Amino acid sequence: MAPQLEERKDAWGRDPREPEERETRKDPGADAAWERGRGGGGGAKRAHKTVTFETKMEILRRLDGGERQGQVARSLGLPHSTVSTIVKNRARIVRYVQSAGSLQSVMVNPKRGVLLEEMERLLTMWLDHQAQKRVPVNQAVISAKAKSLYDDLKKRLGEGAKEEPPFCASHGWFARFKRRAGRPHRRLTGRPAGPAADAASAYRAELAGLIAGGGYCARQVFNVDETGLFWKKLPDGTYLAREEKRAPGHKPAKDRLTLLLGGNAAGDFKVKPLLVYHSENPRAFKGKVKASLPVVWRSSPKAWVTPALFQDWFAGEFVPAVRAYLRRHGLAFKALLLLDNAPGHPPALGGLVPEVQVAFLPPAATSLLQPMEQAVNAIFKRYYARRTLTQALAATGGAAGPTLREFWKGYDIWTAAHNVGDAWAEVGAPTLNGSWAQLCPQFLAADPRAAPETTERLTREIVALGRQLRLEMDEAAVDGWIAAHPEESLSNEDLLEFRRCGAPGTEAGGPAPPPPAAAAPVPGPGGLAVILKKADELLEAILEEDPDRERGAKVRRGVQRELACYRGLHEKQKRKRKAAATPPEADGTPARAERPPPRPAEEASAAADSRGGPPSRPAAPPPVQ
Image (cartoon, rainbow, N blue to C red):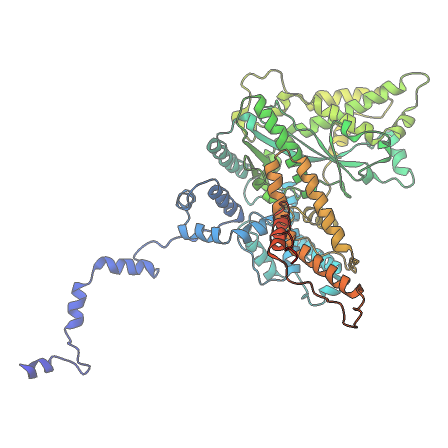
């Protein structure tokens, strides 16, 4: 028997029939599963799905709201592991969004240079602004803008930019930039790849689902938008406008201000206008109280609404006003704020107040959908023009009154700010409600109280006033006059200003662009003490102004905890200076330069100081023997 068994085995001692027997016992389903796993034809391969930063922030918000990771993953059609990875990288994602990164981006390459990353952030801001204004661009224009931004950032770095590699805006960079910005299949031309109406229709359906899911009514949905206004400008054909252009030292840019206007879909709530001027205290304000103005007065060098100004207005004006309005109408404090992708709108704004959800309109369809751009801004500017000309007619009507030239010369920004508030008060609820027809037609009033105001009737009234003032004016001139108030194109300096103003001390800004090449001042011996003292004063001011004492105390404890290391450094510097100034002892031994280790009571006191709480009482000295 033994020799026969040996003949059935091969040279390696294996039975030749064994593979066939194993093959017959193999599970056919295992083969199909193995084929699917290796990408074979046995099953459909799972399609790769990119996740933008906008989706990542939505996932984090929903998880913060109490949903489970599995629920969020199933609702978005994502693997559970993808949601887990997003939670693990939460800090990096929030840091990128807070640094004004594009919400449509899908990746950030940490190996690239800081200068190149900053340039691409600014370039993305510029592209969103161009798309919102429907200004066509192509690869050549984008590459030229990218190179000019890179060169300007390099100049600001000065000596520190010597190690930065040169940038040539090649075709390869352009293709990679589109992929990094989350736009690989879309032409970066300032226009949508398909018809604008299709993009608007798709977002309208998406917004309807968002409103239904959140349970928002017309009084809880809001929109605000910036608009430029040349507050001291007349139609170009008038003799005063021609004289003004010929005047020496005339600068039309100084006559420009930016307004932030908005309201809700019901039309019965209007936010107090935010007015941004290039000067905080103009000469016309001397002896007057800014708090009495019908607008929120702010200033920035370019008269832009920067991220810092917008965030301050959002937390200090918009949220309290909306809370009080909804309380008056017996509604829960929850709101949906719709914004465009203007550079002054921080992407991370939605995380400031959990009850206020912020959604951004698609850049390509903003001009078709945004309610404030439909008719509200145009009607408001005609109200402003009509009010200004009415004042001029009333002032120059008498025999002893000033001439029109004298009136216009004395027309100052204080009067213009009051006219802005009065003109905004004239915009009625039917006009505001009717402006939502393109975005939310379900919110239109079935039986409006009055017909919305029309630009044609206001234009005719302005022409009649102009002719009474003997100004060469017709309806076409008025339309051109009103249309001459668009937002200016963003220059490199404007983009850098947006990043600089939005960065320091605010969540919206993130890392600021490189400062100009200049030697930083070195603080003197008491520099750190002065800084810490100012920090304490600032925290005290926050506690006084914040109505929520618990929130203010929490902020104070957090800041004090972060400043504890600098307080320790300050104490160490004080001891070193004291030791250096102390003369040696009588026996010639030098004074002790180091302080003995702190006692437990002192350690507790320092810990309490770092937490922002009251310092503990030092331990009593031991009794003298």
